Image (tube, rainbow, N blue to C red; front, side, top):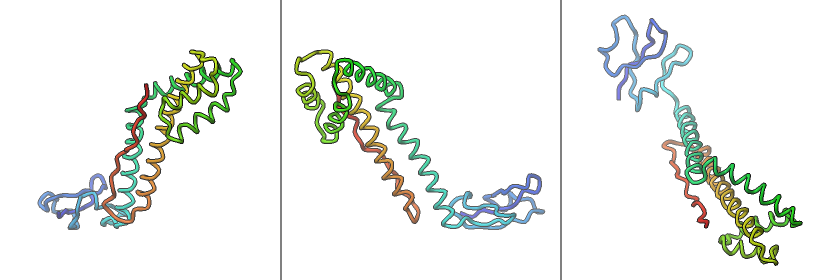
Amino acid sequence: MKVWAYINPQTNTLCCALFPEAISSNVNAVEFDVSSPDDVILDNNTIRLKTDAEKLSEAKQKVINDLSQKITSYIFKYYPDVKQMSDDTDKENGESYLAYLGLDTMSIRKDIASLILSNSDFQTALNTLNQKYNSNNDNMVSYWFSQLLKVAYRKFFVFKVKQEYSTYLQQIQQATSLPLPSFDFKTPFPSLP
């Protein structure tokens, strides 16, 4: 598209017109062939086109901003802030209760992390914890193991989405030309009872 760029004498700002007739006769306009009027800039009182590097840099920043909003929306869609805070409280209460009973919460944390990292399903992980730490089949202990596991699986979901974000961010930052790729998060939210 053609645009006619000029400095508005009253406001001293850059303006672009789509038709030469739209510019008053006492104003000097520069004609450009552009993809978008946004490609024209005022640089030290000189009207010029953005360089490819400037366009790429702006596009990267926009995609990064969009990606940042996408990750927040994606996480909160499945794991709202209120639930995250509730989970933090459950984790604290559960660990306090288990510690009160004399169970080693650091070992339990390590076992939960190990079970999740090995892709154990929820029921298998719960059974493993109960076999190791709950020989009396205490329902309250089993309940708190269940809560701690649910929290851990949801927190691991957030961790995996953030890893996905980092991969996408790196791809954007390493891009050398336009158009930039678009990204959608694919990490599934865990299916929990």
